[in-house]
Image (cartoon, rainbow, N blue to C red; front, side):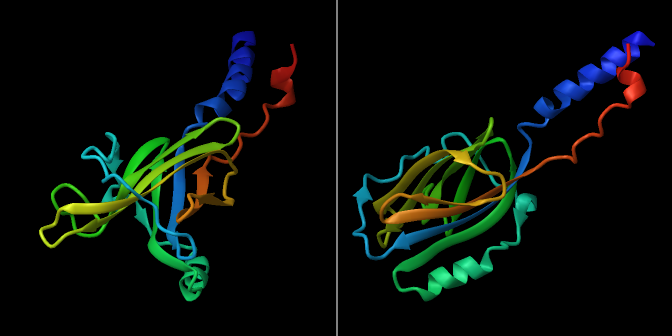
Length: 186
């Protein structure tokens, strides 16, 4: 019986750590800040996804931040380039939008999530322009990170001319009930 009590206590202590890296609901709005001059970079690399898997069709979600996107679209200081929502595990996902041409999309990049005390986000996105033959002739890059993203709160990642409005919500199971007092007695 004593072993059962010890096992129950041990499980109660380690269970939260087992769920630390779980499934996240992610919603992002990529915007161009029109008042800031565009900074073009070298073209997006051939391995722009950096090995991350594309978001599976079944993981896509209906965006919920439609009011925020509408307000940004109505303001001539911003151009909404992408508004997307999905679920993902901890780690990186490849994000793309538009017609693929010679291995590149008009918008492509990756978003990496990991969790410790807060949620850590690393975003690396390119907005590409193509010539008439489908070759990338110019790219703009947003490369930002934030290691203090709070669960379920809206976060703004400012990359100058490109910016990201991001909401990451960790799907965690409801906290487990405390063990019965009689199990805690020794």
